[in-house]
Image 1 (cartoon, rainbow, N blue to C red):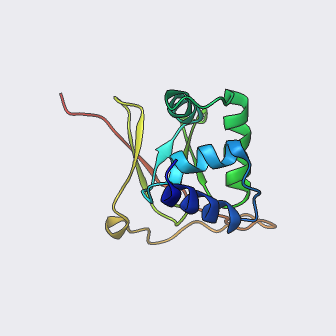
Image 2: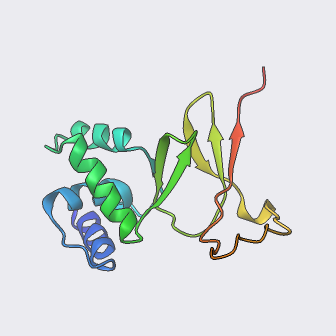
Length: 139
């Protein structure tokens, strides 16, 4: 891990008050070390860590991603009610889900217009609005 990537990862963890353990640093470096936004699944992050020779279990990856989400470092985007992607861009923005590739990408926020949301039921408030636009390649 380069010094710059290590610093970026450490800073990312510390802004959320998370201790920079070896596993957290390894996964943070893969997520934000180069400063680029990512959409990952637990499995793809696990594979990337293994590919770099890191000794981390899939359970640790899941637990670490959950801790990152709870700390506000990641946004979880659920597709099909069962498949979760984790997005390093935590600002509100829409996504494209490429069905043929099982891949999530950002959609242009400036092209999305939501004129009105329904009122929340009594005793509830809207916490967030997730927009996932499903795509498939034309035949």
